[in-house]
Length: 401
Image 1 (cartoon, helix red, strand yellow):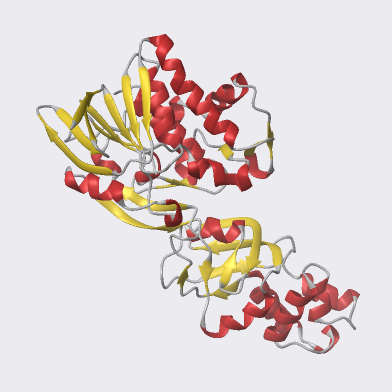
Image 2 (cartoon, rainbow, N blue to C red):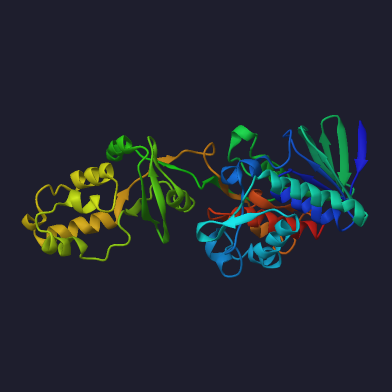
């Protein structure tokens, strides 16, 4: 069996792995990247509707502890303060990639996500001019991984490679149809690292029981505020034939646990007392018409029916209208689950941060072993936050291998 020696072996040719390889290669390191897929950056290619929401301008500073979920809320701060959205944007601009900002600080390519993958591969190619090189082995199933004599030995296909540094960048089990799995966790456990329980995140929620009747509204969306515990998001929600989706729901799903209710404010812009004021201004109006001024006719009719106020507003006492307002502003749903890893954009949980250096991503008790990106227990909000974590953690490890 052919044996090749490298300075670092990176398992996974996604965003984190490729930028880690480019960073290390441009430091003169000989790097091997191994992936089972037939092309690099496959999750990048499908992200953002094919245009890649490659970062968020707010993914830095104090926002890191607020907008990333981890057992250690401060773990990501070190890497992300040293490689910020501005740093990645500078790289994008240096490669002549046109981009634009959508809502809430989200940056997308004007053209195609393929430009981001091409940029990362080009950065890997630059290693040669710095005395290093990056080899990328695709369509290779990873076999035995072991550690002996201060080196990590990896079997892939009919080859074997060894290096003093090994980087786990294989992500989590979200989107299994693309080959995603829990391989990173198995490998981490093999070397004594702990795992924070993985779960689907940024994922649609499913409904049962009395809420099943809402399935007839499949395809209806509304601008709402969604709450789960202390988490609160103001974006669009979408009713589906299985339950609830849309950006606001995906956001809150990362915080949701089985048995927890979520509350939806269907009219987040209305001040308390709005229904009583409408009673005085338009006494012959009704709840359905009041809701219809803000929501789709189908949604307004369904909510009005469930509230049970069919007559004119003038016929309802203020106390009853206040109760209706309270229900509309905090409509409770009890999800019975999620649509699982198949529809999850990312995986929450993962390789526990207490076993890693926040500066380098290296395992504290296993020298030369690193973990980066989605494989680690750091999960960002929807809107480019997870890519920025991939870039920052990849650079942190690339500077250390």
